[in-house]
Image 1 (spheres, rainbow, N blue to C red):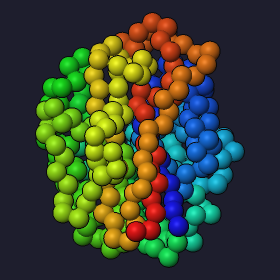
Image 2: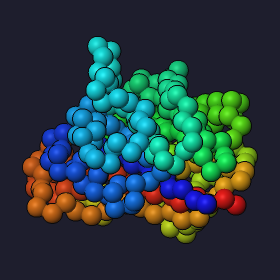
Image 3: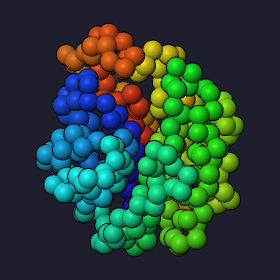
Length: 274
């Protein structure tokens, strides 16, 4: 018994080959055999519309209905969870818990589901962003991220009894924040499986589709509180250049840079029963 989870910040910007980028995201998802769980961050209205039209989308239950997602008070971008219907016998309602301290509309998006004789809770986060990318090591909203992570763990531990997986863009910058100390019984899938690999999901030295700095960090993480399942494999995805696509200068991304699906790499994790 096993299942796969993909988490990926797909970049809200629509100034650089948006249709080609979302097509590339779809190609990655299809090449992975349609992961059982997909957690996306920085989904914008335009990218949701494009992804919703892809054939593979029909296989999933989604936290947002592309046909009804706009409202007068809607945020510019958001997180999304997709669960493959064939992988779960029941899927509960999706719930969004807005962080009390957010100034960016951030929250914990979660859903409970049952599959393979197990009760699961899958959640995604996009913790407060370190605004000021010219100096990415400065502690912008550092305290907010600490509190948001702690609130996420506490809420899930208090109300969820089954297997819990939280995946997303944590914006955790260890150079200024220090190591992310998880609660007892929680683990970081990357640290567990590849402790000697830095696992940079944001890497301006490798991914040239980034602002003009040399910053690299493991901003994206998969946190688990598991009793009967365990992560057995983890890898980065979305590292390929989109052939024939190049960006003109926009928001300090540099002139005619090669285009990748996003400025972040995604993370694919395989879980098996322990």
